[in-house]
Image (cartoon, rainbow, N blue to C red; front, side, top):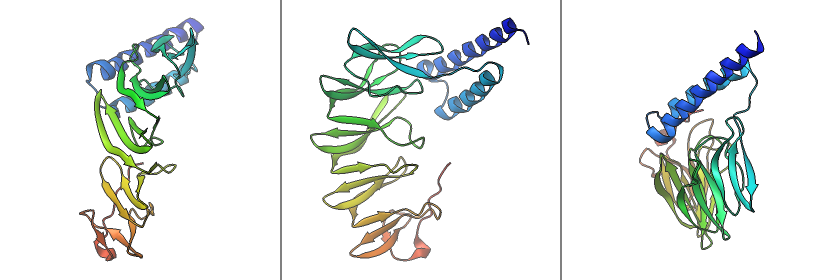
Amino acid sequence: MPHNELKHISRELINEFMEYESMLVHDNKMSIDEYWEMREKLIFRLCHYHPIELDNSLFTENGKMGIRNNVFNTILVPPIYDEIPYAVPHRYYTVAINDGKYGIVKADGKGTVIFPFIYDLAYELGDGHYVGAFCVTLNGKQGIVSVCRDITRTEVEPIYDLVEHPFNGHFTFLKKDGKWGLWNYDHFLPPVYDDVFIPEVMGWIMVKKDGKWGYIDENNEYTNDINKAFLYHFKY
């Protein structure tokens, strides 16, 4: 295939990607799942015809940091923040730092503030299981906030001693006053257990209470009857 024709095909696909991204980010016409399905197909087509990276990178200007898209050469976050810990690989939201405080901003070309710069620390949770969920630290305590299509929500109040998300895990562990609980978008267990264990192959949640191991039933209550243990279905 001639180079000019190859370049033309790639440009058409890039324009298609930008149009769909605009639909999601600005017009809210697509669900996130639909977007990701479309994006994966488009990336495959782009790579098949012409190797190209759809990645973003950090850049500095006048001592301030921003995020630029390397393919379209567009500014996703302008250089108006003291620091951005890492470049988000996709065009949604990112952690930024101003005056020593952490906040969450939108990669919309303006760096619109989604969560204010009040946190001692903030980082994105998960490794693909969560979308737009962040662990935040405020006054020495940790919690979880989330954002989707600019709708913000405090999932877990910052009152916990520890919020810990294991690698490739489907639940986030919560610890308070020496007790353990769990959180994900569908389930919340308050930290009232001595220990928590999740054998994900089986899909159970096992908890230790009063020195004895048991299970969580469909009502999120403790039971020592395995026949009443609720089987969680995980999506891969």
